[in-house]
Each structure stands twice: as C-alpha cells, then as structure tokens.
Amino acid sequence: MHYTIERLLNGDPDVVRHYQIARDKWRELFETQRDASVEEWAQWITDEQIAFFEHSCGGRWPGQEVMAWSGFGALYSTEAGFDTNRRLAEKLAEAFGRSMVSIEVKGHARSAAASYGVVEEEDA
Image (cartoon, rainbow, N blue to C red; front, side, top):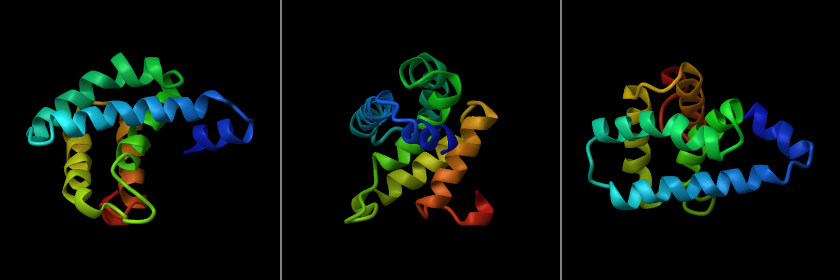
C-alpha cells in the first residue's frame, strides 16, 4: 500500500480513478467468470497484469499494488465484510497464488488477503 498511501498524501487525483477502473475490471471478472476454475482465474490474472492493470492503473509499480488490493476490495464492504463473496475472495487468493504474475503482485496479493482476513497472517 506504500504507493497508494504516498499518492493519496500527495493529493494525486488519479489514484481514486485508478482504483475505480480496477474495481470495474474485477467486477467484470466476478460477474462473467464466477464459475470459472481457479486455474482460469489464474490465467486471467496473469494475462491482465501488464495488459490492463499496469497500463491503466498508474504504471508498473503502482499498477501492481492497485491490481492486488482492488481485487479483494471489490468483494468487501465495511458494513457486511465479504458477506456472500467469501468463497470468491478465497478463490481469488488461490488464483493469485497459482498465477504467473510478478513476485511483487503475489506479495501484494498475500498482504491484501491477510489484511482482509481471507488467509492467516502466516499464510501470507
């Protein structure tokens, strides 16, 4: 979250837009590929790291962070937690782990999954 926090503290107006763009991309996956296998999700994640998230969400390093955190954030609400999305969040964590994304994205995904309580801290 270092890139996000720094950008917010510096008043970067694009950071909110990048997270909203990413949220919409994740929601599209969750709606259209809800029943796809973990392996299919992992392939989608791999394909989209550079093709979409890094190009559309702030560049290489910020885009990697946005990619991971927005995926879990798109499934979560502070009022209801994951509510009916718990299984999707677990599937997302597993898909990130099986994907061929960069080690940095995997690290962000493990941190996000642990922060949201999808996995145990020691698993992250």
